[in-house]
Length: 147
Image (cartoon, rainbow, N blue to C red; front, top):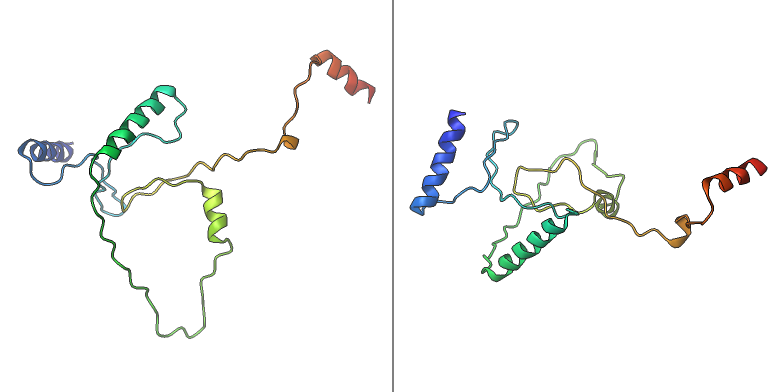
């Protein structure tokens, strides 16, 4: 707890004295010995009306702020010179199938991954929906007994 308190005090001093980058999130990933830095955001799948209202207000404020330019660096593909046995990694699932099954993934900083994603809601055709009827449960049970 002393280490966490020290990190929080350091973050407060950065904010008050106006130097360095202030962390919005304090976490530690012991598996990778990594301190992730990210901004905590609301859940985009939230069903609450007040939550949606606050998200819209936040997005409006973000649109008004000036955007920072991001410089993209090209990654070099690793090519192994010798592959004596001709072993290749081949996926059984295509990229499109994988994206469709996993649903939307949030934009997270390096080192942080989601445990699971919520698949996109599919619109079911009218033929798959059961139509509502005016029959009571007793009428339906009597119909079943006659079959």
